[in-house]
Length: 286
Image (cartoon, rainbow, N blue to C red; front, side, top):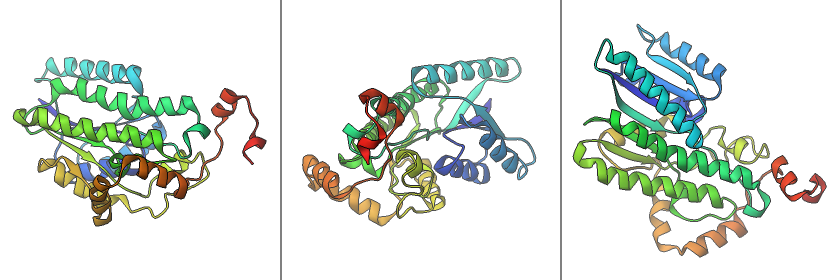
């Protein structure tokens, strides 16, 4: 049986770091790295395969967003499993890392509703769907990591939909961990605060190039992998993040959302889709 690791959103940031560390520290027959950006995936695979005696990193160019994306991955898994059944015993997913996702900065009324719905599709529907289609290939000892966020612990103004999607990921992951425990399958939610990735540039629509106070991803990923394989359900690397998550229990949900809306503005550029939706011009935002 071929034992594989699957990492989505692997072309940059935390997903890329997961790929590097899984390649260096863990023994899998293949590591499938999945994203839409073919050039970045190929480049990463070529670099890491040079460190191995065989080509264990396999780039898979695929958009996994929403039901259609999940169906594409389901079909891909079934095809690969069928091929292997002819010569081996099929596929076992030893590690599944659901890392694909994005966020949007700004008040809900000032962000594209289409963009928000796309975010829900990727951050929630895709994570749920991939966990579901992966279940037949998970065995005792398999590990699932779903990337949530520190934003999952409290509703946040200027970050409303993103925070809600990550709250879903955290809740779903913990519940799934409880359900799969008797089968020997471990599930962990990674809940990072600010990490140095492309996240801010995408979330702000170019208004903020880097995450403010971003922490390097290496230690965040290393701690998450360690905790996940030990059967821990949540990974929060920095003491500051753990304190914030703990204190969120004592802050009213509305109070937290109102405070962050008033005093934690997040820079963002107007979205072209939003302009079309509301039939207004860029000058209305200046």
